[in-house]
Amino acid sequence: MTAATIGRPGFAFQAIAIATLAALFVGSLFVGVTNLSIRSLVSDPEALRLVMVSRLPRTLAALLAGSALAIAGLVMQTLARNRFVEPATAGTAQSAALGILVVTLVWPNAALGWKAAGAAATALAGTSLFLMLAHRLPPTQPFLVALFGLVYGGVIGAVATFLAWRLDLLQYVEVWMTGEFSGILRGRYELLWVAGALVALALWTADRLTILSMGRDASIGLGLNYAGVLRFGLVIVSAVTALIVVVVGTIPFVGLVVPNIVSRFAGENLRHTLPWVAGGGAALVLACDMIGRLIRFPYEVPVGTVLGVVGAVLFLILLLGRNRND
Amino acid sequence: MIEISGVSLTLGGSGILNDVNLTVPKGGVTALVGPNGAGKSSLLSLIARLQPLQSGRITVDGLAVDTTPSRELAKVMAILRQDPGVASRLRVAELVGFGRFPHHRGRLTAQDREIVAASLEQFDLGDLSLRFIDTLSGGQRQRALVAMTFCQGTDYILLDEPLNNLDMFHARNLMRTLRRIGDEHGKTVLIVLHDINHAAAHADRIVAMKDGAVVASGDTEAIIRPDVLESIFGFPMLVERVAGRLAVLHHT
Ligand SMILES: Nc1ncnc2c1ncn2[C@@H]1O[C@H](COP(=O)(O)OP(=O)(O)O)[C@@H](O)[C@H]1O
Ligand SMILES: [Mg+2]
Image 1: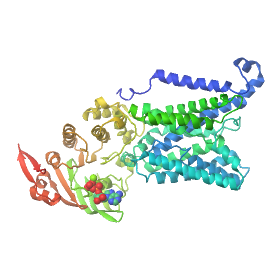
Image 2 (image 1 turned 180 degrees about the vertical axis):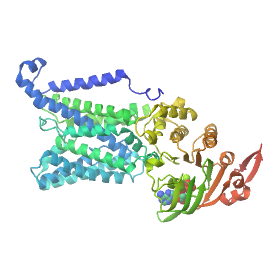
Image 3 (image 1 turned 90 degrees about the vertical axis):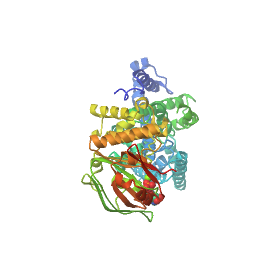
């Protein structure tokens, strides 16, 4: 049957998308305070070292974080059955920050991995509570759930900030709340590969997540272990968000904007759309990180700040153009 | 065979079902009728294990619905709820294809694809197969959901007011399709209907519910009678034979 293949992005479109991502990847290696050229890479060992120690890790971090953020957003939207929530604003990232704060308090010299584990645990608790409450809101009013998410995330964020202020740890919290790649070096980003692995796991369970998005009754009717897949999704969202908050900090809008754009054009059969969401997230974060490096050259604007602006504009365009395509 | 014995249900302190006992024999079309709030949807969701059984016992084809693994039941029985509220942005062909999930639990096989194509054809969805379901009319979406339920290919099919939103052409088409699969393939269809005339024309048996209990059940001819209908619905109506078929005049 051809119905399964028509209406999906064609080969040319896929080629353009991959070329764009590749161009961003290469571009990101060459953008920065120290001027690099391809020739210097061959002739100058210092230049090569700069790439291997700083530029390449930074670029890989942006790719991994971007795709993982977008996928986490999509999975969270599937769990909440609401297109307007994302981990960065609906309490997951804030709960993660709270978790790192607690770990830092009781064990100041904890390794990054332990901080990530603590953050994942609190993120799981915070996100579970959010979903429990969100499922009680009327599904006929999607913006109510989104609004509730903002308030919920805001409250948890405020608790974390207040605690940090009392404990004189405010500068740490600011680091976790604003995503930034400038501190990324070899040896400082590798935890993000775990987030990448979780994205692969999500790809593998795409059909089950799609069925989950049809709702509880449809899921049970098709013999899906509804509660099990729900828990699996929660773990993905929480772990991915915690890892990103620990390594680079909170990056807003990626998890919101990218899945919404992809859904507009390609729908929500996750088996087909997850690769586009992952690639779109990677491209968006990479592009915004490069903008952050260039816009006040030679100073850097954090990627979280750039995305605060770019993401908000994209989101507004999405909202205002909502009914035209439908 | 669907066997229901001693099933009661209480939700939020009020009794919804009160000691329901019912046997739906294997094969053919059984219509479930009754006024709003009679408990039809509640009974269907208990049979389809969408709600936990509080008391009593329900078996479908000998399988107890509360202890048989859900994935096994999904190959035996399919349900379409009254308000499924499927909001995902899926294409019609994709949605219908998910009906095959209980069988492959992974990728659609060539045989699955054939069944999907036949289902799309059956419910007149060929032209709509690439449309996103959130761009369809209520009736078109209802047809897509019915097609998905059929695609599941189960011996037992439970449908809760599937004629909602359907125009006369597609309502008739659906009822005739149900009739046919009941006859040709020996499948068991349990369908909640509001239009008593559809039940009169297409069902082998009718089960009537009222206030959380089964008040009448039997062959169609035995239920479509003025006195029985009045006792169920609470107002008198005429039953006539037109061209050899039963017709209920309930709207005059
Ligand atoms: N979740 C619930 N909590 C409390 N009462 C409910 C719930 N669901 C249904 N009811 C009540 O149960 C009764 C039967 O409902 P239902 O099975 O939907 O009837 P029908 O499908 O025959 O119209 C109604 O009075 C309804 O108000
Ligand atoms: Mg009902």
